[in-house]
Length: 454
Image (cartoon, rainbow, N blue to C red; front, side, top):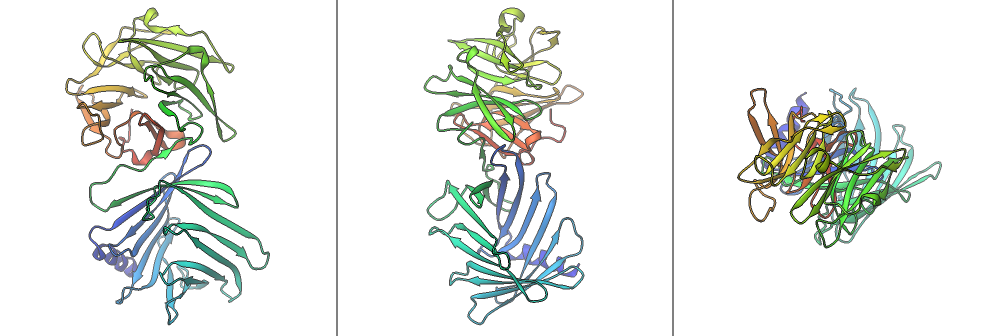
């Protein structure tokens, strides 16, 4: 307990606003959130703390570094898989400072393995030798670096079996100084995970969370994608792709099969304005745009085939765009010329049809559109308060909640830039949205939704 308290003291005194590096990990095939790791650094670049968390947010590693009077690492204490007793690492260095030896000591005080780390003149790790408690060597590792300072990867080889594992990173969005946002990690040539990085200052205003390009190359492409919508089980979705005409988009349907997203166009309904899939994945609601006229439509999916489209505006008098069906079958949508003014409207489910639209949320000081809700307790909407609709203190995705007294509570999601199509996809651990160019996602835990959202 004394050691743990000491390390916390070192951590907080070293720098009152340490740099925090969060690396979110995603499945490269499904896009599902896998967990993250967080590093805290002092202003001089020294790493102070390291954490690894699983997809549910459970902590699997807490690692605290200890520094001596001269500023050099002397050891570390760490807790694995919820342990309350710390294990330790003791560091020693060769006279020239190019060999670092790490002795591992269990929470019971027993000596465990030993690792020898070879450093270059810049202090970077370039090789490792791994030893068992009896002193026999069981593994060796080579570490590689890119010219911009990013890690290229490493090769680990077992001494006895000669079995080798090669890990490599492929970066995108990398700046000349080596700062990166996205990279792909592979093992023996097979992509293992996608990593997305966010840098911030502890206790300062946080930047928007760096996002994953969902289904990169398949769903998010070099073209422009918008209107993401997922069924409740996270195994099917729709989205739209467009060119020069924003009001005439190509609709697409994607289904998760054998761990891979398979995408096909929905050709039977023609060009659309925007769309959403029902919670059960059995129908798609979409809007058509002709000048200022917005028509709401529905098309069913049965045994893998699309049925004849229905004109909901003609049959039930509901008109508008950005449709969303809740779990009870009620239809929410945006109507720019609604009976009570511009805003979000709701039509109650009545058999296979819908009742008279009633206003849910009208806003005079902002354009408020693209609703999403599951149970009607609260709705997610996009709000733009000015002509630019740029990301900022006001423009963005908001959560509008309704209490038992009919009072409306409005709260902006701070971790997300100006976007629309916002939806929690619980089965994948994601919050998905679009910026009009790509379908994007961040960890659902980082979206800042209320506990009992929707």
